[in-house]
Length: 384
Image 1 (cartoon, one colour):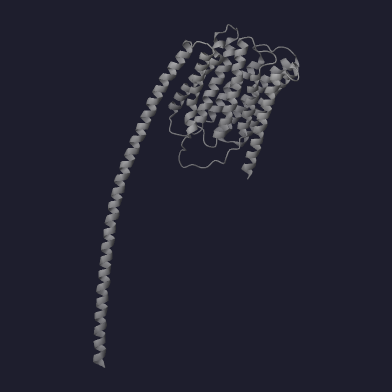
Image 2 (cartoon, rainbow, N blue to C red; image 1 turned 180 degrees about the vertical axis):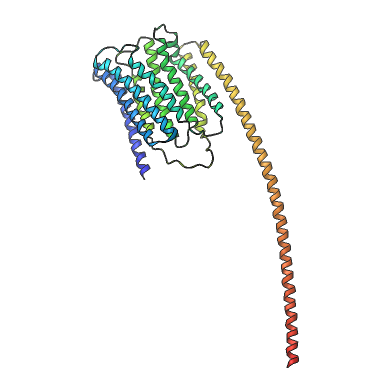
């Protein structure tokens, strides 16, 4: 009953986050309260969302143990650093009413959050599910990273890379950091336990949301188009950190002791390969918008083709080994079954033979008793 109550509370909180995110986006889009009010609500709202995520992650860390405790603690630090960066940004735009210098201390907070988020998500790996060895997990990680990079390249990373901005390295740091975090998060979900799956899904949604905002920020900054009022894509930061907070308070079920390693769910197996759909979407977007597929995207596509071919060969080899093991096990079971069946048949014959011997013994004993009874009768008659 307590778990059902926590789930209802969580559903209500998730609905509130959805409504707040919608209102936040509409406020930026319409500028109903004026540009200065929109800027204040935009900046302060993002800082509050990140601070709430930091507090929620700290709360989750206090109630967790082992790797989960470390993971939520690091995620709390990451969200806290991002919130600190946004506070600095708000001081410039809201408090001083001036344009934020670029780079600034705000960027130090934003970028310092990346390694803590990476390490925090890595800590969630714990004990792997499924049969994939460690090197196969990282092999999948290379494929995911290439797919995400190819997608980001089509949707703006190329413009950042080819820009002549003096802050190009800093501009690139945001999307590259998001690609690294997204890759490690997808791998974490690939290895998540059944108790972690729901939390990891919300964590993925949150990271995906603020990654879109980061990429938009890097693209607009490189083009000199990031204004004081910001963009509706800023909603990605607001909603993303709130979803990370939801991930931290997700009402996980009570862990059940397992006697053996649990198998992976189908969606966990498919998730890394879903990133390839994003890569293909990037190619389609480039074609539709009239952008040529350049050497980098072609190289990414070729590398993905090679890696997928190698991966398919490795998977087929694993399947063949599994089939061989299954066939060997079946043959062994058949032999053992036939041996056991023969033993049962011999035992049955022995039991039947023992039954016949028993019946014969009973018959002989009954005949002897009858004979003794007749002798006793004759003896009694002679005495009379």
